[in-house]
Amino acid sequence: MSNRIVLRTGEALAAGGPPGTAAEPEVVIGELDGPVGTALATLVGDQVAGHTRVFALLNTDIMVRPVTLCVSKVTVKTTRYTNILMGTVQYAIANGVLDAVRAGFIPKEKANDLGIICSVWLAPSVIEAENLDHKILFDLHRKGTTEAIRKAMTNEPSIDWLLENQDKIMHKYHQLGLDGKL
Image 1 (tube, rainbow, N blue to C red):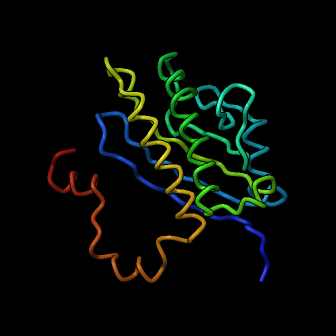
Image 2: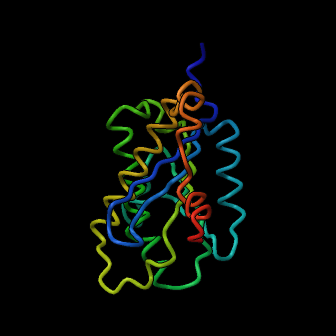
């Protein structure tokens, strides 16, 4: 069996804070000399207005390993949103990646060989928060990133779990639609 990590996917939801602070990252992880590396390089070189892609940084000039590209799921339109996304959230993602390495979800010896693409959800309503709690925002996005990576690297949920629980799970927004609340 090969030790190569060709392409793994994961997602997570970290919520419980004030409105606008929930994290719902989706990650793709794989070797830089494979499809994930190609996708990462393509995304970096093909920037799109409103969806700028940036590396996860601890601070300016300090990029994390594995190299992680943050891609916004929301079209960025305001300076405040940009500063929150490219400040607190970018920093949280960087810390979440390092937490995943520290926890052993990503093998430390592969830190220079893997790439991560992290699709980032930051609620557009965050710009309306008068007293945004950046600590809670940071904690939720850090936790969500680590959890998405853990799930990707452990192939969770398993197909057996999904088949067993398929009819027990109701999508929140589908239910709201059924209840006439959308």
